[in-house]
Length: 196
Image (tube, rainbow, N blue to C red; front, side, top):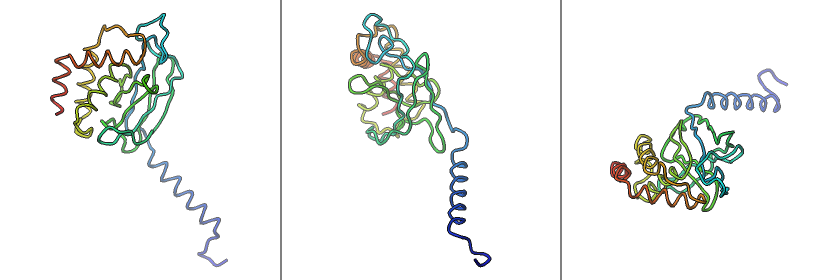
């Protein structure tokens, strides 16, 4: 072999090393953390009717972080994790990912789904956050027009509008009741107007 020429194996090894260094440099430290608690009627996505209050779900419930298009349609699941004791979850965002209106958290499926915008620490998932997501998607305002601060203000207004409301006997019923209560709230209407 001539000096200055490498074998195919050596070149492949060099390429692999460069790719590994690039991936390590890109991943680096997390750019943000999204965390919170998942709460559902009776503490379960399939409720225990003997305990109808809103409670944290048990450990082991899957939480999905999804990317949405500007109209709110799911594009892809970015990451999944499982809840820990007390319904707590945490997802670290890397690279260019930051809390945004086009990042959505979800648990459950079908009429038992609950979603929340990924707004950073304290992105709790439950009927109130599901109501906020429904109101934003129904507003007709493209998701990129919603700042994280405006989404947080709306989510907080919805949570205040449903505080103390009975949990209902299912996730679907709790979601409907939370959305109806939020639609009647002047504070929620004001938060929606600020985004329009």
